[in-house]
Length: 269
Length: 182
Image (tube, rainbow over all chains, first blue to last red; front, side, top):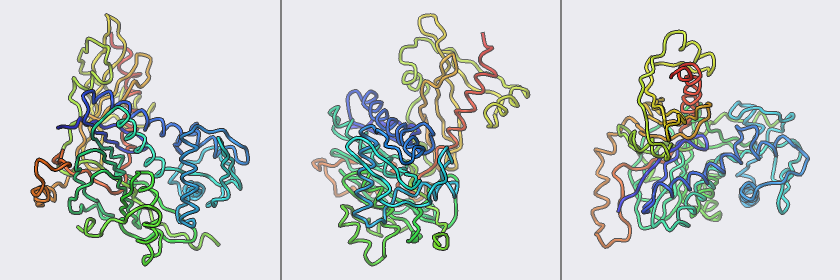
């Protein structure tokens, strides 16, 4: 049993897809195409993406593709359920800190809240000049789409690793290591039929790893936050929640939202 | 008031794929050619020499410095027609070079990009750790089988910005040095 592996650069990072299938190259290309679609729709960097169109048309109802609509819905639900610890309305703050590019947005609010995103059946309206950024959750969603595309083609097993957002399916055991905020690698452990995502919070900026967590009311805690969940979008979103949550409540908050904080033994170097 | 509460904690969001000091090879030259130009029957290799003036032009067009003066390029031919260019190039990843292939149409569009080899440094932990022992209890009857030697890594997201710059550079190189090839 062997897996054919390929890698492309999508969603701002390096993405490896592996599959066990007699027509592996075709199946992998289909899976990459799903991820590229998410990239094209939800990139903040691309001024012509559907997300950028939404951000540039404040107060106007914009029709959306089903994928963008779905991710915004998932993000909105997560904002509600996490009491705002997860917040995708921080595009303004990230633009101000040059973590994201300035397009044609009007003077943007640094941080909006869940009420600034109004979703209807097939579209959305933004309020108060709040800018949406979907980076991590969109990347996780793209991983989920790629996995579903491979399963739809009858693949028995495979995995996707989109810059650390990993999801594995089928009867394989994928060895994984966590890299912490000091770039050191933890012990190897196995991942089976699950998704895993990690966010590292550090005090300095590294342009090779340009992510930024911003929250007006909460300070992200320095550390490495790894979450297991059944979907990659959820695992990625919950890493942000974990980094911002009260330390004593962290594990129970993550569990109530459908994830599991990885045992520190797995992260220990 | 919000500004007082902002702490500049950069999230190094998530990571790279193979463990350090290892090269994960995805495609060899022939396989990459096949993936990017499945219909083509001939790939004619050329070693394109880039002179000083051309290097300056590439920098001016793309904003990216052409570091080497020879670039490996293949002219792609299908049914006697020149349909594009196949180029193999290197960019710096986390520390090491990442080798990738790019397919270009004759009129200067990107047909596709595939990573051929991804490399990282610092692999000692993997080699020295006894992580393989974790799999010793597993038998052939176990539903879950270990499929690869090198663990995947979950950590901060490595930016592919250097690759994006590499592609810009190759597109400029096409204008400056390839469009005049016979």
